[in-house]
Image 1 (cartoon, one colour):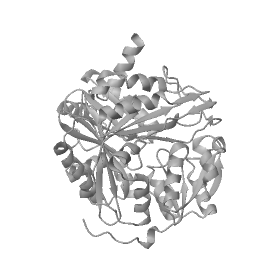
Image 2 (image 1 turned 120 degrees about the horizontal axis):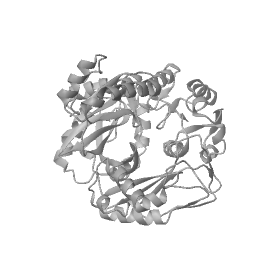
Image 3 (image 1 turned 135 degrees about the vertical axis):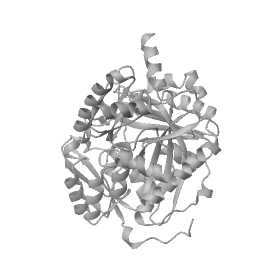
Image 4 (image 1 turned 120 degrees about the vertical axis):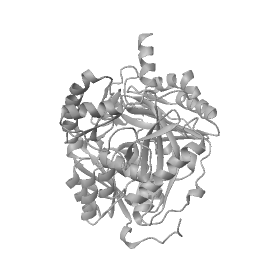
Length: 461
């Protein structure tokens, strides 16, 4: 890797507008302050009293409570940036974080988008073009063609037979668990195609689909990368995000248990090579299915991940700061040989929801007690008296622990969950406490289907 260049003039800025809300807005604000940068916080009407607004240098309300008229309103965000004198926009995760048009609009407005270029987002946001890019870089992919499904029913049937049932149908512009359907056998193929096309059209604005082999018992493994604008890239180890409910992650850990370094290393290096080939800048995550010792690429998230803290704690790298510095034009401060991952980390997503039905729970937090001590971190924006809004995602906090071994990290998380108290609203804390007592999970013997099966058994008991 070449010698680190100095900061380029193009990325210089001293004020960052945080185009997001909740815990990630607070997390980005902290990283900016530590880098000596000013921050502009934005809010909807529902978030007027968000605590991070009080510590920001500017705090602007940009619209009504509904996300479409506030956090997804590109014109309002750009106007706020101009009024507050911001030189950069950090999108966080969700909302506009993977919107190529927004990235392009930010740059055209003379601001810096703290993330990849619009072309990188577009390439990796479309599952077909992403698969082609990964194949070109030598990244292993799930069996299936790197083209969209045609309209001809006979050709679709032939593709499915070549792959072999069961197959999975996915929207080319999909994500977040939407726009996908498993097809176990041929007689339900065309019905599944029709339903998924309509879902894709409504959710992503395009009915385009593709087809892949459906793996029976895979784990969900992620590889975190950081890249600069000067041809440097590194990967920071791997995470296991297999504990999912309805394709939504619940618990994440780093490193993924039971995967030998000689198996994961070539995959990590291939991810780095893919980033270099597409000119990627900033942080990103490659997501894989892992089964029987083999990795299969499924998608790349061109943004900061919710679960980035587990990699921060094992790698010792502040990923949010590294993302901001890359956007400023700085070269990476570490080589691949500098990356060492120590110990084990877990993250629990604490949601404002009923622990049995998982229905959202809005209301006022009347009491809050958070754990503390060695190896314990809480990322949150809530406090006693905080009003949880019904308008947004139910995530209210992330509880993260780190310890020398996985077993010690499990114990630490059990104790941390026992010390966490949230009253006034329902949360999934009782569910998380029960999950960390499960034997199979404790042994690391789970896959992406395990949690759904575990919940069915609990309901039947």
